Length: 133
Length: 305
Image 1 (cartoon, rainbow over the protein chains, first blue to last red):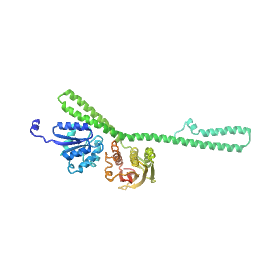
Image 2 (image 1 turned 90 degrees about the vertical axis):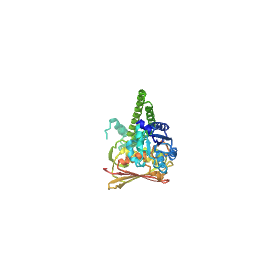
Image 3 (image 1 turned 90 degrees about the horizontal axis):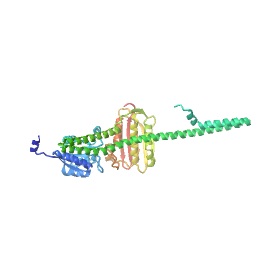
Image 4 (image 1 turned 45 degrees about the horizontal axis):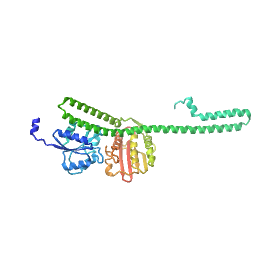
């Protein structure tokens, strides 16, 4: 399998992670890029994240919910309101909402999905793989 | 009513007994020394009546002090319980983020150390401990938010009044007047008393925070008919505060949305409030206009749901 992977050039998918925890962004970037399937951009606040999203049009955005100054939901609204970024799939990262509570909030967040921190790498990759465009 | 011990009976009626004893002693000596029965009788009656009124005054003062102490104890307990939810959410956020970093860091180390069995074993143990800590935090969240409902049939007015006592200090501090309009003869509600108290404590706290310079907190209780003809009780909590812009009202029940400045406020209060009302098969709506205040309308079905 590895032999074929060497022959066929892999088209890397771009993932943008917007999270105020710099160390978390650092390790997610390391882990995803280690797989050789992803190129990861990082932003530590909402405005920078929106700027990167418009500029680089990533294939998926991992978006922390609770951030100072601009929350993840406000960032998501801004991205949905921009023609360049409105169709980029978003996965919310949350340390507070529990799995059982997602059902009542999915509609309010326009059907977006959640990853609950802390998250293991294989689960993270599985969720990204399922949602990425 | 529990039977009082002899000591408690003497304490309760002490002054009256002393008055009676004094009258008896006075009567005995005076009877021996003179024959004025009418004067003696009048004095005796006056002393006994005086003793009776003083005793009643002391007893009612004692009862009032005990009631205040009981209420303050309940208030302290309820404040602790109400604070637990906010503390749990705050702790969860502050602890889960570092845990998430540890887990991601360990994942990278596992990949890097996959050829070294000993070091790989160490990193796997670290990962296991981090995930165990995560489960403990999840348990804390569960305790604070998924407490099973203990339903009982009761009047809602005393529950609301008790929630008011929890914010009494803040009302007085901010010079906020409370205007209550309770319709008579309201049907009883099947409810979890503690959770409904939490709902109204949260609403009162929001109203108080919207009126930093004082104002009026209005509470109206009335009977209403439900959609299916079932009777319900409507509670309207209103304030004369800053109001909420329309574009924010539609997100007011979002779990992480907050109109409050503090970045530590996780915005979970109203989402939890709505969750409790939903569990009671009720409804909650918010009407607000910037500069004119806010009205929160809660409807709870009466009787069996």
